[in-house]
Length: 556
Image 1 (cartoon, rainbow, N blue to C red):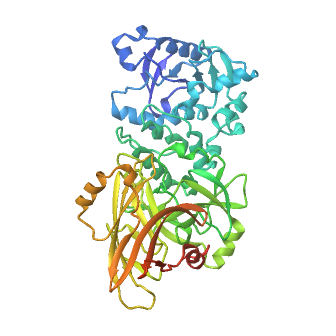
Image 2: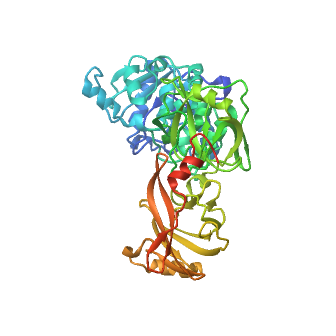
Image 3: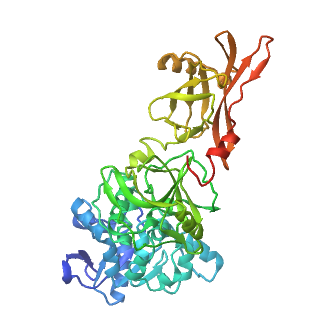
């Protein structure tokens, strides 16, 4: 550890138990900060940040301390090894200091009893930076100074004001200890960082290492992958389901029967993309059941046991978590997938009544299941843009069935869903097999192609082709040349079969499916009589199908 001797402004290095008592500075970086290289080249006095160093040393000597540590000049940032060691040791260095001086360079001296001053205090840049979170809670003593180095408060005396700004419990701020820190759930600690930012994306993860007492190698250039690695390291050391409790907590209280809305976005991973996704998680508490099974990482992602209830459009997985102000409900996340492989299907957290959980378990409701979730950032968020996945529901019918769908994997026969990636453009081809009328034995096949064009900010546009399907390139060329007003399904296609005339048309509508707006694909068939009249061939209606197959709380 490199320390600055306050009386001589000379650097000295110490190892292990030989490190003397020292003061430490917490601040936000600005222009012309003084680096170690500046001291070596003798140009430190020419920079604006030199006055900050002088004031820190002055305060250090006034507190009967001989040494100070200042991040701008006590780390050789040209050495990647030293920088990595410093970042992984930062929390401990602040924790072991005798006193921490917080210099708010964008603030005048405050009278926090004044409402306007208290409001301005909260606007200081220091409260919005990622690195300053650990600098607030790690030291045993923290003193706040204005731009002109006028003291206006100590952490334990202004803890109520600090709590309003940071969301950290005021009682904890009065005398923070490691035991108290690690008693808080992972989600709660993440929520403290949810509104903070760092200049480099990776630092938003590296600045949190001390809060969870973990260490990871520094890999600048990895971007958001750093936060995935941080969460993976936390998972290796703690059994705490609250790390999966990110997102908005729904106001919906789930009771049986119930329905969780089906989304237009899927998160393949259980892991969050950034601390910002824990913004609503400050009151989440986790618990560890006696029969808890440790989760593991494999080459296929995270393997974890959750209590799962499989349903028609989605599954529901219970986390071992609840909200501090709501002891009667446990938190649940909606998932989708077949077998062990699952994906989280939206960023909502739902509350489920604990009594009903036990009741449903006795009726083969929620069952402990080993599940797998991807942990790769690329599979969660795509390469260049945030993906959306669309779901088109096709009601079942006794008159037709979908015999083939292309490309492979786009048709979920169990749930009767077309699953689409809205990545620029998608093309779907369905092959339908009809049996008309009921009781007749003849069959014929007709292809229906659904061409979908969507972008991130707009709802998808649809175009349908009925009949013989040309090559993909020809379809795309045809669609691209269509004016906007021609988008949409054709009115109908007339088909002659065995001396009879049929009209086939399809319709895509937005309808309420068990409480959630979804795209529903209707296939309309009608027979044209000799007199030109249309006789509609009844298909099983969506409402009838829902009553029989969608029964809430049952899966098909």
